[in-house]
Length: 288
Image (cartoon, rainbow, N blue to C red; front, side, top):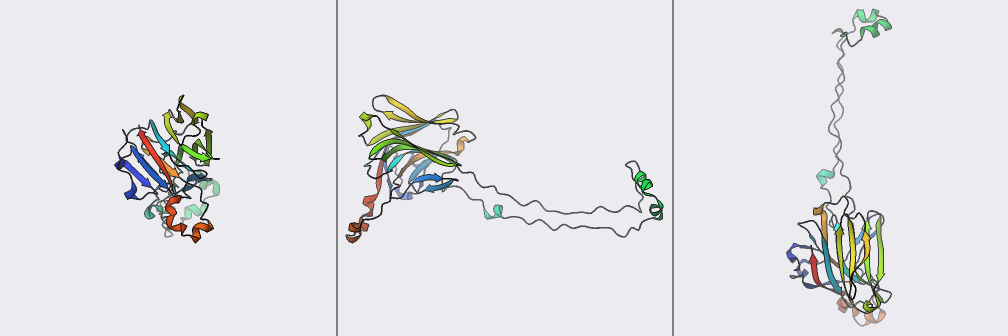
């Protein structure tokens, strides 16, 4: 049974375009949209994304993606975030981020007490022997210690760490469809492609799955003849991640942007810019 759409949050999608039923729906990705991270943790988050927070610890998610793949790097599939999705990181409030100036130190010296004749006549050795823990100073020699009044130290708001995320799906590259995955951490992101079997190479759809195994995240795609095939294992993805910080959803993107041709400009091609969008269909979304 597909999850309820009311629990999903849109990112780079108008609120009125969120589908009411997630058993079968479509995401539209304009050109020059992508989900990527350049070192050090600089995100490009322009791809249409639908994601949800989970009430229970994440187990697995799977979906079937299909589209009329045409341009290089056209893609769509599942995405999982360990932390806030890019573009949704809460910034500290101005009050918390503002630095508090410490109070000026106030030093009070008591100069009213004059030194006694006894203290002037004593030698250095006698003064050292006189000033022992077992002997108290005369009241005449007592000088009040400086009193320093300081405020609390300035408040420090550490920068929010970059969230980890993984996306997996179907990607069009070199005129063929591939199983694809990208893993992003605080150092940046990598990119992995896996060629599909010959009997699946001409198909335009693929069912993909992500699954939690201990602290690792396993990435799968479904072979029409051999069943599920694991093509990547992201070790320690869930290490140090709270269950409530996990977000899971779907994405679509068309990173290529080759601009308009001279013919399109002369014949009003800009009026039909919607024809340049990538429409990715999703079927059978399941999140456990």
